[in-house]
Amino acid sequence: MKKVFISGMGALTSLGCDVASTFNGLVENRSGIKRFAEWEQYNGLHSHVGAPVPAYDIMKVPRSARRTMSRMSEMATLATMQALGQADLRLENCDGERTLIIMGSTSGSPVTLELYFKQLFERGGPQGQMSTSFFKVMNHSVPANVASALGYHGALLSPSSACSTSSQALVLGWELLQSGFYDCVIAGGADELHYMTAAIFDIVLAASRRYNYEPERASRPFDRDRDGLVVSEGAGVVILETEERLRRRGGLALAEFRGGAYVCDGLHMSQSSGDAMRQTMGQAIRRAQLVPADIGYINAHATATLQGDIEEAQTIAKMFGEQTPVSSLKGNLGHSLAACGAVEVIASVLMMQNNVLLPTRNLDNPDAMCLGVNLIRENCSSAVQHVLSNNFAFGGMNTSLVISAVGSGQ
Amino acid sequence: MMEQEIVSKVNALMARGFELSEKDLVPTARLKEDLGLDSLDAVDMLVHLEESLGSRIEGERLMQVKTLSDVYGLVKEAAASKS
Image (tube, rainbow over all chains, first blue to last red; front, side):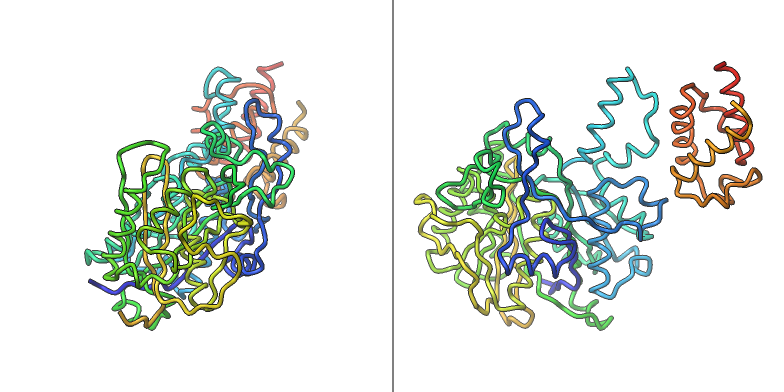
């Protein structure tokens, strides 16, 4: 196995437009969730809360690249610039034969899709459509726009698996680094907030609807009084490099990416499967050449849905017992779908660097069905060596990965 | 539409739509070489012009448009056919 390290991280989240402000917001246990009164107008939509990314400056990107970007591509581009800056890398200088961009989103831009079809139906055809619309809605819009904006010339992949997109991109990147064909991977994901996204979950009774007037209380993973997830937006980008390349160029390792796994359960499109979760977590830990007892903290997917949180908590209880600290960051950030996996990895790296474990916001009364695991409810000082991070998605997609502190030894 | 009105309207649209400086919007300015517009921008320019004029311009006409002066001519022609 090649050792793989994280050398750069970038993020835009509902708590801030960079990694530092996001992590500070988490440490202060703030909420990025707001009420969206304008969503009340949509017939059949019951969830009126969401977590938008604060205003950001995209004007540093030239118009020729910006014109084909929706919000998700803008945020992914800015997150990639942050990650490259931290790693002290320039994409245009990367060896295109040894570098790989892997990024995705749940779908093409929902904001643009709505405008596109609204106009299409109103005008009875494509008359008046902008030439740039398609480039915002095509499935690989996010990485293609990042590449275009940053002058990247090389290999590019765009996996899409909804809420596990960016964690799957990271695991795929790690696998391809192991293959020897590449030595640097820029991996991540992005999604933009839109009422249609809230509706997708609302329709299947998985979006919060009881806290529309108390938005900061709406997302409550593992809590007895949770009633569904809160959709969010953002981008998370992580740079993975082989040890050999990082050493050669004198780069700094932020954490080790030990390995991961992705498994489709093939059972149900929306209901999570404890067996598949166990298989995925187990495979990720084995690939990381560790055992469950080595894991010092679990960053749960836990989106605050009724069934998903129970399945995940009970599976963790069976595999890890009641000692390993567990939390979900979606109580603060909401669920940023394709971005959440990378964002949660970034937060976990910072937890290890700062010797602190962050709790689940709004976990006032743990659900009796989620007991048997160590659900942390306040910031805990702890020098953790190995973190397991989970993401589970519609379509039966399950992803788990392991990151470790630099010099963790094993 | 008067000549000056066309120039003002087109220039305002070009400045707003493509983030161009008014001082660069001279009749001899070449769309590609001087204003940095490409084929995607040309299509969007047509959409902006059609919306502004309220009349259709055939996309094929773009093939003959090289300078801002050509754009003024295109708009003048479309405005005349509309009236």
